[in-house]
Amino acid sequence: DTEVTQTPKHLVMGMTNKKSLKCEQHMGHRAMYWYKQKAKKPPELMFVYSYEKLSINESVPSRFSPECPNSSLLNLHLHALQPEDSALYLCASSQVLGGNGQPQHFGDGTRLSIL
Amino acid sequence: QKEVEQNSGPLSVPEGAIASLNCTYSDRGSQSFFWYRQYSGKSPELIMSIYSNGDKEDGRFTAQLNKASQYVSLLIRDSQPSDSATYLCAVIRAAGNKLTFGGGTRVLVKP
View 1: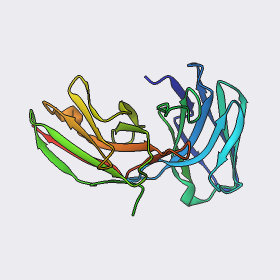
View 2: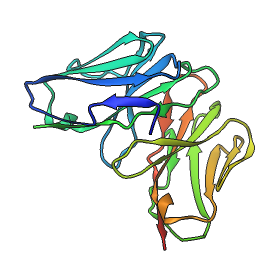
View 3: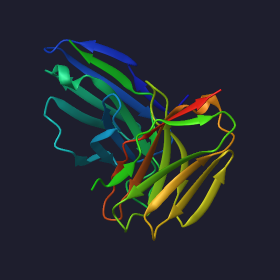
Protein backbone atom coordinates (compact mmCIF):
# COMPACT_ATOMS: atom_id res chain seq x y z
CA ASP A 1 0.00 0.00 0.00
CA THR A 2 1.29 3.43 -0.91
CA GLU A 3 0.69 6.70 0.95
CA VAL A 4 -0.30 8.39 -2.28
CA THR A 5 -3.76 7.24 -3.31
CA GLN A 6 -4.98 7.45 -6.88
CA THR A 7 -8.48 6.84 -8.22
CA PRO A 8 -9.72 5.25 -10.32
CA LYS A 9 -7.27 2.39 -10.83
CA HIS A 10 -8.54 1.79 -14.36
CA LEU A 11 -10.41 4.09 -16.74
CA VAL A 12 -11.75 3.46 -20.22
CA MET A 13 -13.13 6.45 -22.04
CA GLY A 14 -14.12 7.55 -25.49
CA MET A 15 -12.47 10.41 -27.30
CA THR A 16 -15.39 12.75 -26.63
CA ASN A 17 -15.74 12.00 -22.92
CA LYS A 18 -14.72 14.19 -20.00
CA LYS A 19 -13.26 12.46 -16.95
CA SER A 20 -10.98 13.26 -14.03
CA LEU A 21 -8.16 11.45 -12.30
CA LYS A 22 -7.73 12.02 -8.59
CA CYS A 23 -4.73 11.88 -6.30
CA GLU A 24 -4.56 12.31 -2.54
CA GLN A 25 -1.71 12.32 -0.02
CA HIS A 26 -1.73 12.87 3.72
CA MET A 27 2.01 13.05 4.33
CA GLY A 28 2.04 16.85 4.55
CA HIS A 29 3.93 17.07 1.29
CA ARG A 30 3.77 20.44 -0.48
CA ALA A 31 4.91 19.34 -3.95
CA MET A 32 2.76 17.11 -6.16
CA TYR A 33 3.40 15.76 -9.62
CA TRP A 34 1.65 14.16 -12.58
CA TYR A 35 3.57 11.75 -14.80
CA LYS A 36 2.61 9.77 -17.88
CA GLN A 37 4.21 6.39 -18.50
CA LYS A 38 4.00 4.34 -21.67
CA ALA A 39 4.92 0.65 -21.74
CA LYS A 40 8.65 -0.09 -21.39
CA LYS A 41 9.47 3.62 -20.99
CA PRO A 42 10.34 5.66 -17.89
CA PRO A 43 7.81 8.09 -16.42
CA GLU A 44 7.52 11.42 -18.25
CA LEU A 45 6.82 14.52 -16.19
CA MET A 46 3.65 16.43 -17.09
CA PHE A 47 2.93 18.93 -14.31
CA VAL A 48 4.33 20.02 -10.96
CA TYR A 49 2.48 21.86 -8.20
CA SER A 50 4.31 23.54 -5.37
CA TYR A 51 2.27 24.93 -2.46
CA GLU A 52 -0.88 24.49 -4.56
CA LYS A 53 0.46 26.61 -7.41
CA LEU A 54 1.37 25.27 -10.83
CA SER A 55 5.15 25.41 -11.01
CA ILE A 56 6.00 23.35 -14.08
CA ASN A 57 3.98 22.50 -17.20
CA GLU A 58 6.02 20.37 -19.57
CA SER A 59 4.21 21.69 -22.66
CA VAL A 60 1.36 19.28 -22.14
CA PRO A 61 -1.58 19.56 -24.59
CA SER A 62 -4.55 21.52 -23.26
CA ARG A 63 -6.76 18.42 -23.34
CA PHE A 64 -5.04 17.66 -19.99
CA SER A 65 -5.95 20.18 -17.31
CA PRO A 66 -4.45 19.91 -13.81
CA GLU A 67 -5.98 21.28 -10.65
CA CYS A 68 -4.76 21.42 -7.05
CA PRO A 69 -7.76 22.25 -4.81
CA ASN A 70 -5.72 21.99 -1.59
CA SER A 71 -2.40 20.74 -0.28
CA SER A 72 -3.58 17.12 -0.15
CA LEU A 73 -5.42 16.80 -3.44
CA LEU A 74 -4.40 16.84 -7.07
CA ASN A 75 -6.71 16.32 -10.02
CA LEU A 76 -6.12 15.79 -13.71
CA HIS A 77 -9.10 16.69 -15.90
CA LEU A 78 -9.27 14.92 -19.24
CA HIS A 79 -11.21 16.03 -22.30
CA ALA A 80 -11.14 15.00 -25.96
CA LEU A 81 -8.23 12.63 -25.51
CA GLN A 82 -6.59 10.75 -28.35
CA PRO A 83 -5.79 7.01 -28.54
CA GLU A 84 -2.08 7.82 -28.08
CA ASP A 85 -2.92 9.22 -24.64
CA SER A 86 -3.55 5.68 -23.42
CA ALA A 87 -0.95 5.12 -20.70
CA LEU A 88 -0.36 4.71 -16.98
CA TYR A 89 -0.85 8.07 -15.25
CA LEU A 90 1.16 8.41 -12.07
CA CYS A 91 0.81 10.90 -9.26
CA ALA A 92 3.74 11.56 -6.94
CA SER A 93 4.49 13.81 -4.00
CA SER A 94 7.55 15.09 -2.15
CA GLN A 95 8.07 17.23 0.94
CA VAL A 96 8.90 20.31 -1.08
CA LEU A 97 10.00 21.11 -4.61
CA GLY A 98 13.77 21.00 -5.03
CA GLY A 99 15.01 21.50 -1.48
CA ASN A 100 18.07 19.25 -1.28
CA GLY A 101 16.53 16.62 -3.48
CA GLN A 102 13.57 15.27 -1.64
CA PRO A 103 12.54 11.85 -2.97
CA GLN A 104 9.23 11.52 -4.73
CA HIS A 105 6.75 8.88 -3.66
CA PHE A 106 4.42 7.48 -6.29
CA GLY A 107 0.82 6.36 -6.13
CA ASP A 108 -0.31 3.11 -7.75
CA GLY A 109 -1.35 4.92 -10.91
CA THR A 110 -4.43 5.02 -13.13
CA ARG A 111 -4.36 2.81 -16.21
CA LEU A 112 -6.12 4.88 -18.89
CA SER A 113 -7.41 3.45 -22.15
CA ILE A 114 -8.85 5.69 -24.88
CA LEU A 115 -11.20 4.01 -27.33
CA GLN B 1 24.06 12.06 -24.87
CA LYS B 2 21.10 11.21 -22.64
CA GLU B 3 20.96 12.93 -19.27
CA VAL B 4 20.70 9.63 -17.37
CA GLU B 5 21.76 6.38 -18.99
CA GLN B 6 21.23 2.78 -18.00
CA ASN B 7 21.75 -0.52 -19.76
CA SER B 8 18.27 -1.74 -20.67
CA GLY B 9 19.12 -5.40 -20.02
CA PRO B 10 17.74 -7.84 -19.35
CA LEU B 11 20.28 -8.58 -16.66
CA SER B 12 19.91 -12.27 -15.94
CA VAL B 13 21.10 -13.33 -12.47
CA PRO B 14 20.95 -16.74 -10.76
CA GLU B 15 19.08 -16.85 -7.47
CA GLY B 16 21.40 -16.07 -4.57
CA ALA B 17 23.90 -14.14 -6.70
CA ILE B 18 24.69 -10.41 -6.70
CA ALA B 19 22.97 -8.23 -9.29
CA SER B 20 24.99 -5.14 -10.25
CA LEU B 21 23.24 -2.25 -11.97
CA ASN B 22 24.94 0.87 -13.28
CA CYS B 23 23.76 4.34 -14.14
CA THR B 24 25.67 7.31 -15.56
CA TYR B 25 24.54 10.92 -15.65
CA SER B 26 25.67 13.90 -17.66
CA ASP B 27 25.12 16.88 -15.34
CA ARG B 28 28.20 17.10 -13.11
CA GLY B 29 26.33 19.33 -10.70
CA SER B 30 23.66 16.74 -9.89
CA GLN B 31 23.19 16.30 -6.17
CA SER B 32 20.45 13.76 -5.51
CA PHE B 33 20.22 10.20 -6.78
CA PHE B 34 17.51 7.60 -6.43
CA TRP B 35 16.80 4.01 -7.33
CA TYR B 36 13.23 2.93 -7.96
CA ARG B 37 11.98 -0.59 -8.51
CA GLN B 38 9.02 -1.09 -10.84
CA TYR B 39 7.21 -4.37 -11.27
CA SER B 40 5.41 -4.90 -14.56
CA GLY B 41 2.14 -2.97 -14.60
CA LYS B 42 2.84 -1.34 -11.22
CA SER B 43 4.12 2.06 -10.13
CA PRO B 44 7.74 2.91 -9.24
CA GLU B 45 8.70 2.20 -5.63
CA LEU B 46 11.58 4.10 -4.02
CA ILE B 47 14.22 1.69 -2.73
CA MET B 48 17.31 3.87 -2.22
CA SER B 49 18.33 7.52 -2.01
CA ILE B 50 21.96 8.62 -2.01
CA TYR B 51 23.40 12.11 -1.84
CA SER B 52 27.13 11.84 -1.06
CA ASN B 53 30.04 9.85 -2.43
CA GLY B 54 30.49 6.35 -1.15
CA ASP B 55 28.28 3.43 -0.27
CA LYS B 56 24.89 3.31 1.39
CA GLU B 57 23.46 0.01 2.52
CA ASP B 58 19.86 -0.91 3.26
CA GLY B 59 19.18 -4.58 3.78
CA ARG B 60 20.20 -6.49 0.65
CA PHE B 61 20.59 -3.27 -1.34
CA THR B 62 23.74 -1.14 -1.59
CA ALA B 63 23.87 2.09 -3.55
CA GLN B 64 27.25 3.47 -4.58
CA LEU B 65 27.87 7.02 -5.76
CA ASN B 66 30.97 8.38 -7.48
CA LYS B 67 30.42 12.01 -8.43
CA ALA B 68 33.86 12.40 -9.99
CA SER B 69 33.08 9.65 -12.48
CA GLN B 70 29.40 10.60 -12.66
CA TYR B 71 27.99 7.20 -11.96
CA VAL B 72 25.72 5.62 -9.44
CA SER B 73 25.26 1.90 -9.01
CA LEU B 74 22.96 -0.49 -7.19
CA LEU B 75 23.98 -3.88 -5.86
CA ILE B 76 21.35 -6.45 -4.93
CA ARG B 77 22.83 -9.19 -2.74
CA ASP B 78 21.33 -12.67 -2.42
CA SER B 79 19.03 -11.99 -5.38
CA GLN B 80 15.57 -13.51 -5.16
CA PRO B 81 13.02 -14.21 -7.91
CA SER B 82 10.90 -11.47 -6.31
CA ASP B 83 13.65 -8.99 -7.26
CA SER B 84 12.78 -9.50 -10.92
CA ALA B 85 11.65 -6.06 -12.01
CA THR B 86 12.78 -2.95 -13.86
CA TYR B 87 15.11 -0.72 -11.85
CA LEU B 88 14.97 2.98 -12.63
CA CYS B 89 17.83 5.31 -11.83
CA ALA B 90 16.68 8.89 -11.24
CA VAL B 91 18.62 12.10 -10.71
CA ILE B 92 17.75 15.62 -9.60
CA ARG B 93 20.00 18.01 -11.45
CA ALA B 94 21.61 20.92 -9.66
CA ALA B 95 19.93 23.60 -11.71
CA GLY B 96 16.39 22.34 -11.60
CA ASN B 97 13.73 20.69 -9.56
CA LYS B 98 12.85 17.89 -11.90
CA LEU B 99 13.50 14.20 -11.45
CA THR B 100 15.17 12.82 -14.58
CA PHE B 101 14.85 9.08 -15.13
CA GLY B 102 17.10 6.69 -16.95
CA GLY B 103 15.48 4.20 -19.30
CA GLY B 104 15.56 1.45 -16.68
CA THR B 105 17.34 -1.89 -16.40
CA ARG B 106 15.24 -5.03 -16.48
CA VAL B 107 16.49 -7.64 -14.01
CA LEU B 108 15.57 -11.32 -14.23
CA VAL B 109 16.43 -13.55 -11.27
CA LYS B 110 16.29 -17.20 -12.25
CA PRO B 111 15.60 -19.88 -9.61
